[in-house]
Each structure stands twice: as C-alpha cells, then as structure tokens.
Amino acid sequence: MRKLYAWGLAAILLSASGGAVACAQGRGFVPVQGQTLPARVDEALKLARARAARSRFWLAYEFNLRGGVAIDSVPGLSGVATGKVGEFETRRAGLFMLYEPGAASPSEIKVLSLDQTPAVGGLPAFWLEKSANEESLQFLQGLLKARPSGPAAQQAVVAIALHDDPSVAAVLRQVLQNSQDVPVRTTAVAWLGRLPGQLPLLAELAREGREQPEVRHAAVTAIAKGREPAFLSTLEDLYNNAAADRDLKAHIIRVAAKSEDKGAAAEFLVKVAENEPDEDLRRQALTSINKKLYRRKARQ
Image (tube, rainbow, N blue to C red; front, side):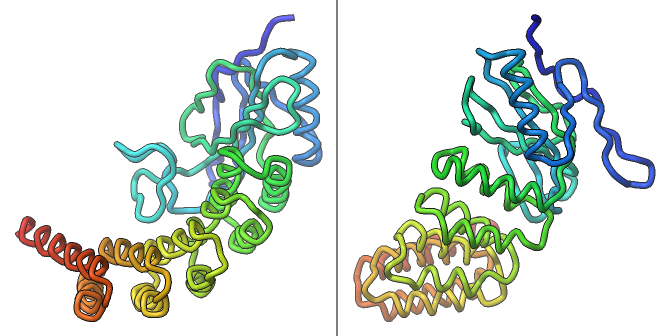
C-alpha cells in the first residue's frame, strides 16, 4: 500500500460574502469526516495506523483565530506576534499535531498559518476540517491532561490563547490553577497578560510569596507588557511591598526600565535610586536611568 505524503492544502477558499471557509484537500492531505472533533481524531488515528503504521503523521484542523495575531509572517521574527501587526496579520490558522507511531497523544503541537501552505515535512497528514471554539478548547484541555508537561503542553496553552473566544481567559486561569508544570504555568501567565482585565490576577500572583518564583516573575513581566493604564503604578506598589524578595525587586526594575511609558518609568526609577537601601538595587536603577538618557540623546 502506497504511503500518503502531505504536499499541503490545495486550496482554502473564502466565500465572496466572507462566510465559512471551504477547505479543499490537496494530494496527500487526507480529509476525515465525523460529527465531532474527538470523533474525527479517532477516525484519523485509525486511518493513520492502518495506512502508515510505522510512520509519524500529522493531524490538523482549523480553529477561529483571534484578531491582531501574526504567525510566522513578520519579517525577521519567527513564531507568534500580537498587537499592532498591521499588514502582517494572519487571517486563518490551524492546529497541527505530530503523532509518533502508536502514540495516543501528540509529541509536537504547532499553530500554523493557513494563509500559506503549511510545512509538514513530507509526512502523512490528515485534515479534520474546521472546529467550533467550544469543542476545540475542550480538546486542547484534554491534550493537556494527557501530556501535562513539555513543549507540546506549552504549545497547547498558546493554541488556547489564540482562539477568538470570550472564555479563553477563564480557560487559561484553569490551566494556571490545575497545572503543576512551571513552563506551562508561566506560558499561561504570559498569555493572560495579553488579554484585557487580567491586571488584578497578575498582581495577586506576583504578590503571593508562596507562589513559584518563575510564575511571580512571569506575572511581573506580563503586567509590564500588558500596558493597562495602571500597570506602572501596580509595578511600583509591588516593588514597595516586596522588601524581603530582592530578586523580585530586581526583576521589577528591569521590566519597568523597558516600559514605553518613559516618563513614568523614569520617575519610578528615580524613586528607587533615591530611596532604596540596597546598594545593588540602587545601582541597577541608576544604570537603567543612564541607559534611557543615552538612548534619548542618540535619537536626537
């Protein structure tokens, strides 16, 4: 029996009215039918093992991608970018899962743009159509239970965060609460920082002394990158109440120094330089101020 090789999706066509996406599978991309996403996954696993039992293979489906996302489309930047991506915004994306022979869960997960032909390395590939948000998010949570740690788990969290659905923040909070894996939890924190309304939770995480240090640092970084109006005053409050945690204070100085709100950041750093009893932290604040001044003069 001949092997099935994936040469990509032959066509992904938008209707003239901007309605549902119609997918036409190209040579080697095997379409799989079924009433639900889990049913299509089960059917694809059966087909893959029957046709290419000793080969690795891909399962893939499209999901509803949130706006303001660029996937491998920004020049000089690989991976996912969010925010003001402009002309580089990705319109459609798919979840691609690489399975090892006989494995029940994927060893690798990728979110790939469907605006161009996905690269699947010449392996057999099975197309599971487009999935609704609810079943896709439930499926990804199931993948996290089956594979709770490692790069695939982290990518599952990224895929959750990229869904265009109001429940994403709640799902990421569940991941944060239920997972014991530090990289998975820090990934969830990082993506919560890109969603509106999460500043109180992030501040609580950063403030919690019993929390994992990596998660506290990730929360501080997420606060700084989230750019909510009160983010810098929140960082200042965290700094003033972190007297016993020198590492956290040093991290707050670093992220504040990178703030785009240069005036408020400089004001905060000056306060640290003037009032901080720890000499090393004062020096770090002064160094950050000098770097800001140097960059400002260089631009003039």
